[in-house]
Image (cartoon, rainbow, N blue to C red; front, side, top):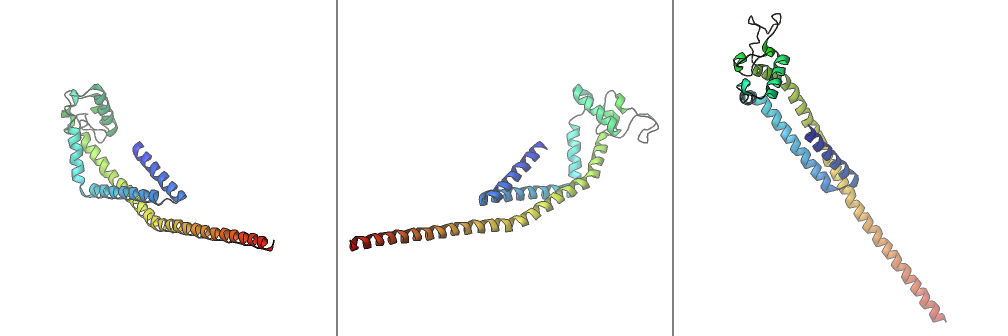
Amino acid sequence: MIAIGVIIMVLGFLGCCGAIRENRCMLLLFFIFLLLIFILLLAAGILGAVDESKVNNWVKERLNGFTPLSAQPQAVRDDLEKLQRELKCCGLLNGPSDWEKIPDSCRCNSTIADCKSSAIYQEPCATKIISLMEKNMEIVLGIAFAIAILLVSTHTVYFPLEATIYTNIQYSHLKFGYFLVVDQARQRNHIQGEFSSLLTSVDSD
């Protein structure tokens, strides 16, 4: 998240500096980076919507690396027990059988719907995690597509802005060159006039 924030700040700074200084190169870099972000967001959204089963398999493969749970370091086991208490589950993939010795975090109150007659959560945490991901997937995809649409609208604003800035730069250069030529012509005429006056005064003497 910090890296994403830094990238957005750099892009914003690049775009602002390019607009203020009327620098076409900076504005072009700003547009290219925004276009890349748009493509990545669009690809991630499409993959998340189409390949949901692959995402679930990927989650299970990563969680499978933690089994057997009893062989994990104490810090990892503490985090797993905290997860079990919050999600009301036990084990990662195979339920309570993932533990050699079932911890207290797997034990539940018989009044809870997820609690079976054995007073131990039977549902593995992988199922709970995937369920949460599926529930939040629509929100995540909605945010991704909203950002993508925002970037597209930014691109549509950028093109006329870039063209206007470039036109203004060219006009400023032409205007500066015109006034420079006019000023040089005036100076030359003034010098010629002074020289003519000097010659006239010499001839009269």
